[in-house]
View 1 (cartoon, rainbow, N blue to C red):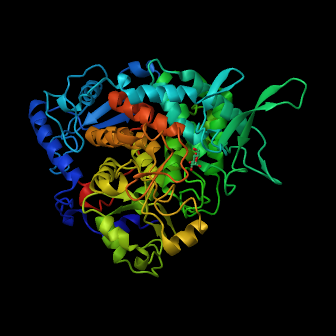
View 2: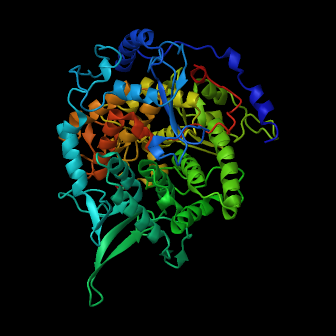
View 3: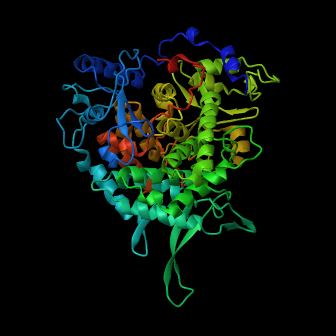
Length: 617
Ligand code: GLC
């Protein structure tokens, strides 16, 4: 690694990366959206130089002012910088960085419930501006939207009770389909439900607290699969309440699955990370650190991190994973170093760093966390990043380079670049690819990892903006008729045979293999709010509102554009319901972003190389 700087200097220098015009087709709906949006916004820019573009949450940056949001216990502020919301067709001209007041202004712009003035936003374009905030107004207050009302009621019905207290939400309640394990509380599925409960008015913090404590209790159980005992820190993938009738006294017990009964028997690597992230959301929402400070909770966090920070044979800071270890819990060729896990790992490290007590006993762990945050962010920001310029670099790679000066660090053969990518890659925009390991770059797009990278600030602000540019430019492919593609493109033919092992659930453009998952809406909308693209969020929400409730809140949709209800999709899938609610609450009140977002850690060095025009504008 000694020659990283000189290596980077050998690549495309910043100065020569001319900004090409945006590549959208003239008839592209997303282009129309942009043009209309920019025009309206231009007026606003004249009216109000402080109008906001990017919302970032300050978690670690020093701020002397007391924060009412956290009761002063945690330093936190909102910074909103730069003008020109979504105006990617012209360069951002003014940048300003202010705090709290800007959040209010953004809240107004995104139209809080009750501030309705009758300006109905139209899909695919901006509506008439009415002063500073006209085109964000809601046709009816969010809380009274019939779909929102239905969603809250369904969410409440999905509650799972244990000894009289709510401890989570069931994955799906589809009376027409076999329950399989969908009658369980999945850790990852509960995250949007928990966020919805925290954002609710008034919030239901109890269910979140109970869930955190019950899953913590399950972590401390001995976990065996056949004769093998899993690591102490492993969190369950899911659990259910069963009635134990063995003893004379009938009692409820919690039965957990740590991967042993899941398809493929893979432990969920994401569960522990989601647990830490949710714990921080809870602390943020309640302004109460006492739960996080409890000794058992502190221990739970440490056990999760111990699993991932132990020394081994790694030459990369990224986490080595088995296929099927996260949301994509079937074989899909994501083994190795999938972006989803790397981004969640980074997010969890940063959350834990904030919540672990600064006591002498934690010093070693905190040092390890700090080093990992630095190394991991460098690794992902540098080697996973792909845009037009970097694609061109890889296309011209030489192989068989020995020594530190190798440009092609992983000995990736340019022949391994798939044909679809040359078409897909816009001139403006970029993303973190699916996986990087020796001689292998998985160029597929995965939404979850990219959005988590934005929310955790694993992506630099320029990278975050470029990711959103890419989604905008490839709206038809990645959003289509129903948000959002979990992965793109689908594996077909021989690739499908070999990579999925002929998986009949993951056929092309279905389920994990290029299917469209409404739950992902909350992640997109949060990323939109963070990068100040509320209109893009609104466009995605509109698509969901056209069908999701009428279709019975399915788990996923199939087809290239997501037109068909998924072949084996459960109806009344809870995270489709709660994902929608979180998206609505986020748009209604952008301050909700604070629950799921971290500001850039200024102590982490940015990658030296700026590879593409889309980074620098
Ligand atoms: C499917 C999904 C998984 C989810 C589970 C419960 O198996 O792939 O991510 O947690 O269903 O909804």
